[in-house]
Length: 424
Image (tube, rainbow, N blue to C red; front, side, top):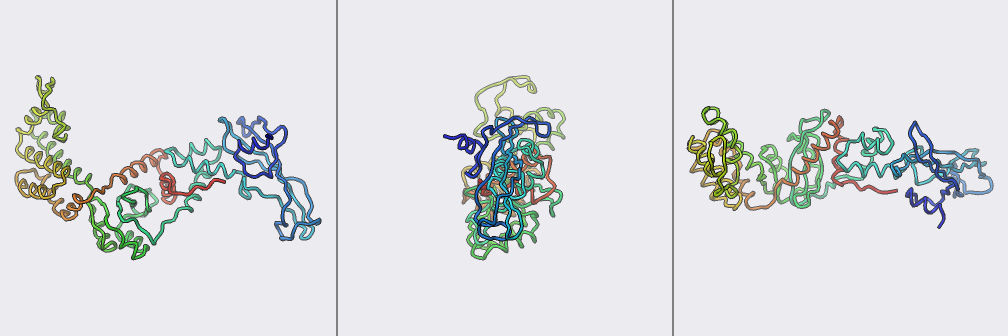
């Protein structure tokens, strides 16, 4: 097996017209950094003149070489270059010169195609673009251009939409038209369908009207949070879709109401202030996980107590807190057992005794009660989209923010494996 084959395999070069020298690799200092430099020659007989297109004949003669220094992916932690001597030809038909082409690098470019693919692949990871640029020995602007170029492979199909969708939003960049950007995905696969710069109603209507009527009518369910413009949008654009309120936001609504009630009682009762502050998690804890048997010493009470004893003690201090606590855990039980009728009964029976914060939560739930019924009937939720949003926040934080929404969108899509990266 020749050394040419081994070097082609090492550098992942598919062009067999490149022949490497006997002394094919040297250690050189490039821009003050110790680097590995490979030496090769590109030569073959072209089919025709690149300028005038005349078929190759005796009038097209060799005309020396042109040396290009091409950045390759790093090897053993060293910056790697390929010094490629490209054969030049002179065409006597058109009196022009031209240089042979190779698929190792694009025309008028010094960064190999393999390096670009390696940058795009690393852009999928939770790493800053500055670190990617440093690792591959390129500029930050080059990384930006490569990420934006690979987005061209991904374009939404306006004739198709998944049957089950999730709607949500995330904090956008300063250059975006709105403060929040809109994102939606397939509820079953978790694959992002697209990202819209602005979540305002008129913008989303204009966007979704790009999709065909057949695609929009094929949507069966859409999971949303309690954001009323989404409901107006779905009723106008997706008339056959059932609206599902995300379970997490229902839990969050009631837990915040209970917590605000606890804080109100805590501030009014200075004698037991420390107890309310220390054991706030016990009031939100699932009843099935509360300890009913084991006694532990608690400094606030200066005696051995079970978790259920602490909860009963705190609830006996205020009837509003106790009623709010009972409603909160009834709601949790109803959501867990999918008992919608019991939830409606609990909301109507305990509305008078609970705190003002819990009354506001009940009013909000009653506003969306028809959609909450769908929450009990379907198993879809926004969990997968909340995970994507968390990843978006991590990418944004690592990069210390983004200026351009278009570039931020491209990075998100690449991170979610939505671009068809083609290797050279």
